[in-house]
Amino acid sequence: MHSIYLKTKIHSGIGSLQVLSKYKDQKIFLVCDNFLLKNGGVRQLLEVIDSTCDVKIFHQVVPDPPLDTVAKALAQFQHFAPQVMIALGGGSAIDTAKGVLYFSRQMSGSSHVKLIAVPTTSGTGSEVTSVTVLTDTHSKIKHMVVEESIMPDEAILDARLVLSVPPQITANTGMDVFTHALEAYVATGSNPFSDAMAEKAVEFVRSSLFTCYSKGDDLQARGQMHEASTFAGIAFDKAGLGLSHSIAHQLGGIFHIPHGLANAIVLKDVVLHNSKDLKVRSKYAKLACHTGISSANKNEEEAVWDLVRCIEHFKFQMKMPGTVRDCGISRRDYNEAMPTLAINALKDWCMTSNPTRIEPEDIAKLLNSIY
Picture 1 (spheres, rainbow, N blue to C red):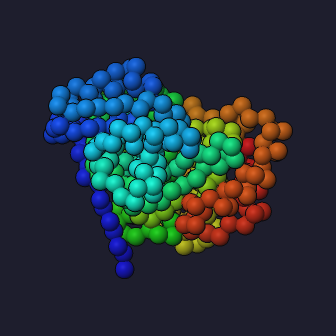
Picture 2: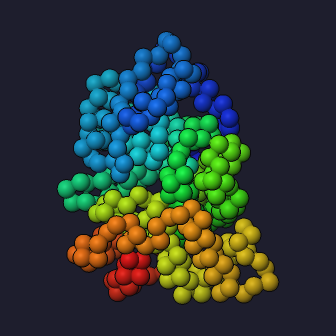
């Protein structure tokens, strides 16, 4: 039996930001970063909010949201006591808002605040998931909170908000989408519903990601990548993730490698490792064939290699670092961190839904291969 819970109401399309105008006489807590406050993103949102609303802005969001940033936002949130919270930005803004909502509900026992996610990158899928990832800056560990109550009530997918995303960030976030879809497709919790979402996400990534990277003002391609991110978010929220994210979380926590880039670096090796299991290999092959990455006349092993080549071709096309070393990490620093990387990766929540069993020696081999 599959139990599928889809809480978030999704507004997708050009001009969908306009749905915010329906809120009247509301106290709205807006969570964003300082960049969006200065570059006009916040102004664009405020223009559609009714003048009867009282808006308070928390603009101290930073990448890999630390727990102390969430605590600062929480203090302002509780003092302001809003009816609506809007998270404007990438995964960091949405995860910060989710963290605020989670801790607020833990402290008060209940909260009727509506959460609206307005993503300005096409990557995390956080606008439709029950997950938030928060960083303990002291231990350099990323903590994943999984709680249905923090899933946004509404998500607004307006591609106009991602037209100005720089090529490098487009590449990183796009590969995060690709990784979400691939991991969800083979995860232990996968089902026909999550598979359908993952397949559509991969289809859109194939047709649109490089266009978004090379022609950032292509509204149709941006719209498809924005929806691909949401499809992949729904897929992994229902199915789970796996080894790639378990390692990427550690690379981000210790070396601050952007999350999507970290996934891009490790994804090929994870696919090859998981493909040692014949059932998993068969499923990767099925995905490759269904999305046009491979063809039906090839055997499963050939189809998986087509998938691997697709991953590497995207990285090459978008001039992404191919290894940890290419990110400027010295071998000495990497070697010193490897025991911690391995231990924390094995403990990572995403590892619980990886389709194959992972031993410490597997992690060590993989960490060496991606350097």
